[in-house]
Image 1 (spheres, one colour):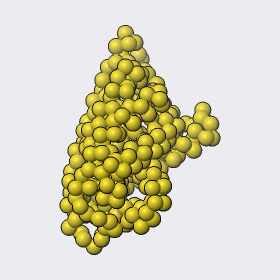
Image 2: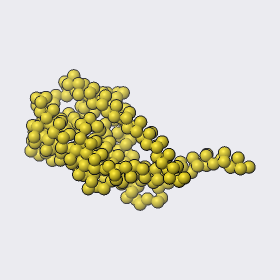
Image 3: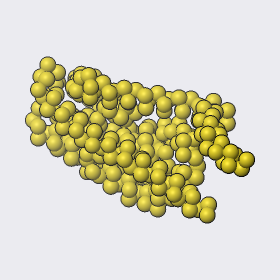
Image 4: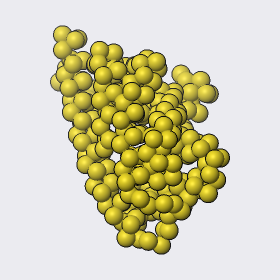
Length: 267
């Protein structure tokens, strides 16, 4: 009899776990709205990833050129405000690379002012992503792995938070937006996050603005030049795929370690 109870325990636990995933009655209407926004952004990002890799490899970069870079250039002074808004929106959709937008700052404004604009735009994007992830992503993360499952990540980020953010922002080819979303999922103070992002974004922004200026390619970008777009897209597509694979591997590894961490603490 005892054996049957033990046998039935696993399916019942799984059933309870799945049921809990779809239970949102404990959240306020505002929190549920943020959760919906977060899920929608993840869904759109996944669609863009699929479309960009399997349908049209220049799709995302054509959007960046036609909808982002050229309008900013055409508006001249007012393009500054458009750039900040675009960086904020771009940050919400992971497959749209901030790196390409940051490259345009060097093309449009030169390496110095382009670098300054890159820092401002990066801060706007990172704070918006962080806020939505904290309000909508954190509750979902707690549902999937539980509060105790996030405890290890919270402890690590509280210990190495600012340093980790600076390093992740400092390295140019690490996805900026993924780090912003991930930071919102863990318990890091917004001030520490902002300081780490600001310091780390300085090198990143100037790296791309200098690169953009050295290209000596003046907007507006002619999107009929498919070879140019492909040259840019092939590099960043490979980088993004590698980063994505690493992130998936890290998530799986974290999940395994967190389960061991919880089990050890209970013992």
